[in-house]
Length: 250
Ligand code: MN
Image (tube, rainbow, N blue to C red; front, side):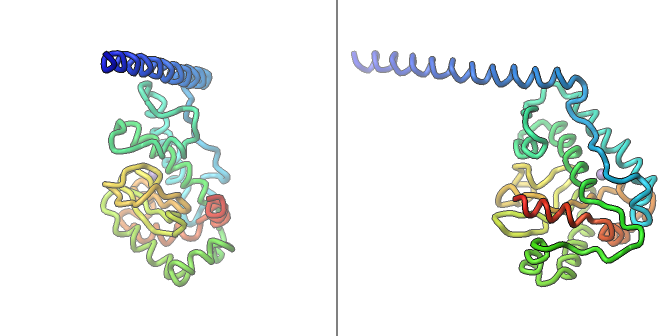
């Protein structure tokens, strides 16, 4: 007798547990839907830039900046806002949303959320340097870079070489992973926050400190096929204050 009664008791409890889980799930979905409808079509929006399009000259030209920001980045945002079936938690930050992405995630979400997050980060890590003054990392980040790569110059060489070798479209990153600085790359609009170990061979989710977009749209107008010139120019406008802030924040 007891087997059957046991079974009924257990399945009854399981049933209750699953109703409870569904209620919590339902409440979460309703909250997310409310937040979404409050935001309307603009759940995702372009971030404000801290500089004008022409202020990164002569290193990054105004036309490239304008097209990159108003067409490419806006394009990812428009596509993201058009996805209604997303299972990404709208209530979390874009950074947290990226950590929810894995190889089973719908490609449109992976590509466009990645595109939005990566570009938002990229813009924040740029700053004007019209007089081409020496631009080097700050305080604690410098120490960590020297510890890991021997010198700032050696780090810059390794980063540049890695970015140069990316085949096709992608990104080069300085990341903090297991308390260690590393240079890694991702294809397309993937980023190191995503759980896509198979593709990127990451041991664990890594936190981005620096981000370099090596898609041709980031440099073709000014540099055509010369990605190396673009990378060299980019070092002049790296916002090391922001990188330092990110490094200290992790
Ligand atoms: Mn881009």
